[in-house]
Length: 107
Image 1: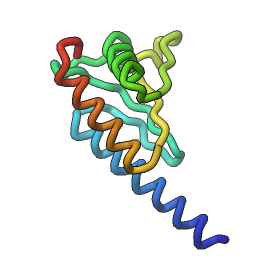
Image 2: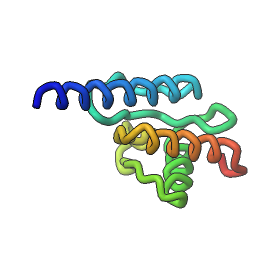
Image 3: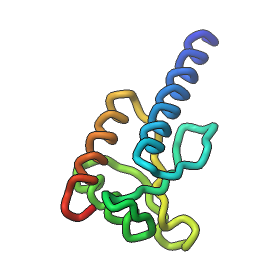
Image 4: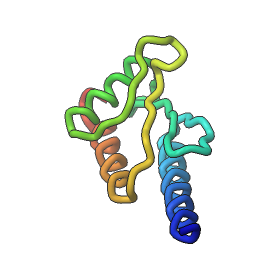
C-alpha cells in the first residue's frame, strides 16, 4: 500500500524535522539527517557542551525512562546523543524531559 507507506514516511520526516528545530532552539548542534534518527550535541543550562554534558543528559533521560543512545568511548562521538524519531507523543515526552534536565541542578 504505497499511499500508507508514503504517509508514514511523511509523518516520520515531519516529526524528525520538528525535533531538530527544537534542538536548534535550545542552541544544540544537530547533524542534518535523512534517516529516522538525529545525532545531536546537547548543551546544558550554561551553554556548555562536551562528553560530561552529554553523559549528564543521557543519565537524566535514562533515569526518567527515556532511552537514547550514547557513544562515550570515542572522542568524536562522546559529546553527542543519537535520538531515534518516535511518535509525536514520544518526542513530546523527550522534549519535556530535556526541559526538566535543563532546569535541574545537574544540568
